[in-house]
Image (tube, rainbow, N blue to C red; front, side, top):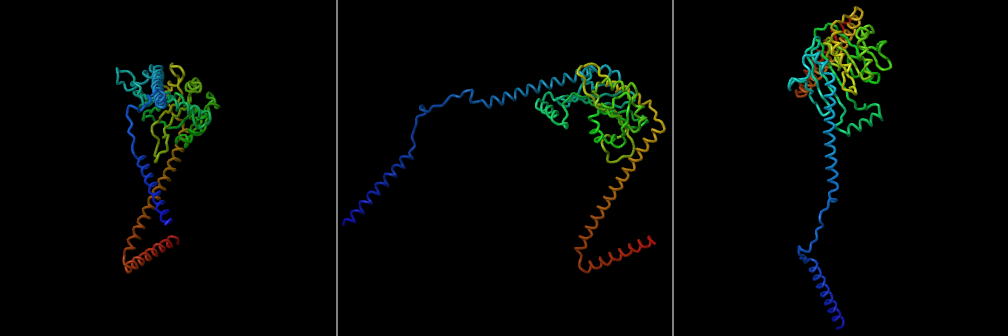
Length: 374
């Protein structure tokens, strides 16, 4: 009887405990209603937008510097052109595109690049001038370039430079290659340019310091003819701003085919002067075309020039023959593969006939070869 009472008491305690736990759980799940008037919201402060303020400030500052740098480059380009415009207009009938009020116009090719077109002169077809200025609008590029140029020789410091390519009259008869290149740029330019690399030999000139410039020409006599006292005087007055002067009737980049010389081009690269006065290097644009038009090569110079062209012609003839042989071999291989695929689809009897024909044809070829050897 006592055991029964104990069991009933234990069951009663367990049921009471379970009911209490369930009631507690239900109480926990019951949501609490809180009045909206009792919710506190912290007011926003300006310090909550620190990151946004910094980003916007940096962007506005960068944009302001970009505009200022672009304007500085435009003023630099205009200032340089103003110093040369009188001489250019005396040499060319058209300077710029003259789209506005008959004034010479620089064409902008970017915030740091400007183009100028000149034409309408004796012995000249046209000239393209590129004014490549420091990226004053992009302070990050300008700074990184300056730093890298101090650390490694691969990167060159940003400078304001002029690059000109003058295309001379096609009627000029003499063809040749001559170049004057700044010493530190000579090795790299010699590798890149097809004309200098193939026919250029190191020459010299007493008026030009060999420690500052390297002279390339097809012969020494040719260098003496082109580098007249007037030309060397202009180069020496540039105070080392001349980077390269290349007069060439050959392409500067390696062509796929070579038959003969083209018309002569003058490639002139130099650093802008600090002032906006007339640059003596621009005089080469007027002096060289006239000097080249009156030039008459001597017999020994022509012999050397013609020999260089014959060697180039033979080299490209071999290259063309090799390309044709490779193309022919490729066509034969493709035809052979197509024939093999066709034979695979034939019946066994037809394949045996094909093999017999191939053997007979190969035997005839061998007999012909043996007959030729005898």
